Length: 227
Image (cartoon, rainbow, N blue to C red):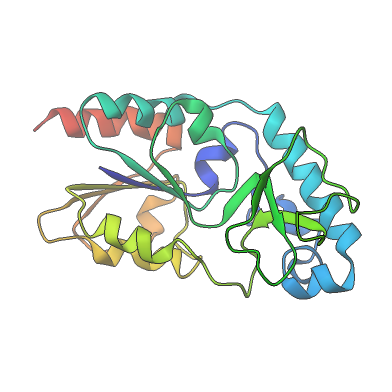
């Protein structure tokens, strides 16, 4: 079972989304807080923005949907591929999680050799005085707009082996992650859970479950129990 999750699953834990009408992008411009250029122009603002997000993540708890997919490990070999940068899947009990867009509770070097230099953040605050072993300021371990997605190839290989693919809480508007649904083998059973599932442009082979993540996994369980 491969589970591709987006902001919708975390929204039910109280984490603000970016793309909703009352989301974070209403308060900040993407160009000001989520691009390499923003970091070069005003790193203090970027640091404050992610500090607030990190503070919110720490205050939130996993919900029933997170815990459902952790429980699925009793029956399936489950891999979570998440576009979210929070750690709710980890805290919900899942053991195999691939983060496409980074992890907000970690930092990395802002220098040229940043690919594998990751540091756990103690608490929610990362300051401009925090530096890595090579002397560069630590930045959030997130993939900004305009940056490559390092784990994308690994995600493609995982999806290509799926017997079951479940897409939860994502509009499938963020690329290249949205393309992952097209790498499934022919025999794969595919489900999409989203309040607007009927409006999503997905192949006809998908079973659409129009519900929130928490309500949707209850219906998903019924589908899985049918076979």
